[in-house]
Figure 1 (cartoon, rainbow, N blue to C red):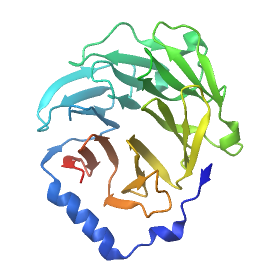
Figure 2 (figure 1 turned 90 degrees about the vertical axis):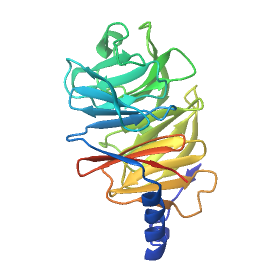
Figure 3 (figure 1 turned 60 degrees about the vertical axis):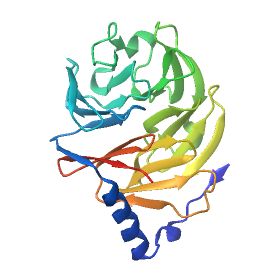
Figure 4 (figure 1 turned 180 degrees about the horizontal axis):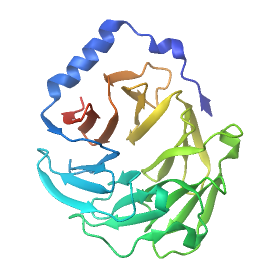
Length: 268
């Protein structure tokens, strides 16, 4: 099913946007100066994980520093902290995935994805339903499942049917409640079940980042952070904040990064 989000419906009255922004501002609690953030994630404890180049730092509920890890494989492209005891780092340029424990100590050896014939990984995320991860392979143009024992990747879904020829397929992905959500070409969010069957295809033009919490889709588009109820897609998206460069959500906690400042707030 293809749900179209009409651009005209975004043009809500300015007072609506101002009210939403002020609601967020009233809930903000802590801020932290951090330069050069390249990736951001949060876990169910309310802890935040901030990557700056090849290093990742963990901050507590009050944004106090707790731990730091530096990898030897260049820039960290993404962090998946959905399991705080197996935090996944993706070093895209070096085709490697690393796992860290709850104190940011390495768990085992890094996974070199070409060892299992994943030649052009575009995005990765943890799988909560098994001891493994999901990989979007730009070479095969497929969604793949790989277990941490490095058994052969299981082909889950072909992606060509959902993007135009020549477009980048996947720029971000998460697994939530057994379903896998992919950002396809910055134009739509595709939801697949654990067997690779398409559940929904949501049209969201200009999307640069997203996450899913329950039935809520949080996403960045044009520097604005929105929330959209996926069960009521015809409703207007809610503006959460403006001028946001990066974001992470987990439970009621929201972390936004802009202008070298990391801010923790509470979703209402």
